Amino acid sequence: MMKKVQIPGGEPAGRVVCNACGNKSDFVEIAENVLVTTRYRQNSDGSFTPEENDTEIFGAVKFLCGKCGEDLTQYHAHFLEMSF
Ligand SMILES: [Zn+2]
Image (cartoon, rainbow, N blue to C red; front, side, top):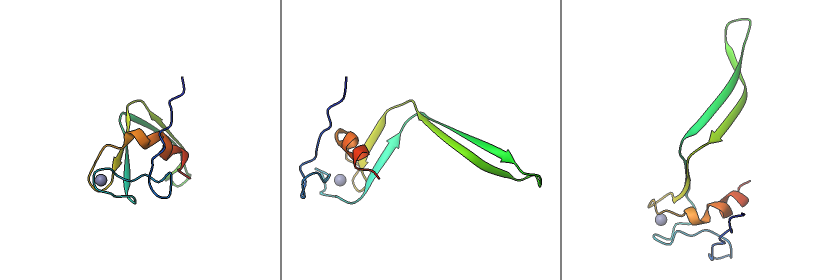
């Protein structure tokens, strides 16, 4: 089942505004239980160069106000759609 995306009602429409402190510029995404796998190639001089990076998230992902820490996870799906 698709999770319904909650669209924030800020001005202009669709901007996330922290309902606790009014912040609309700084946000934090926190991912729990993250597995990061990085492939390296060893060069002829013995140094290593990262080639591929893979991140898997097994835990919950939270979306917080970057100023007061208010939990804004209800807007996380919206945040993902608007991240580019
Ligand atoms: Zn805030």
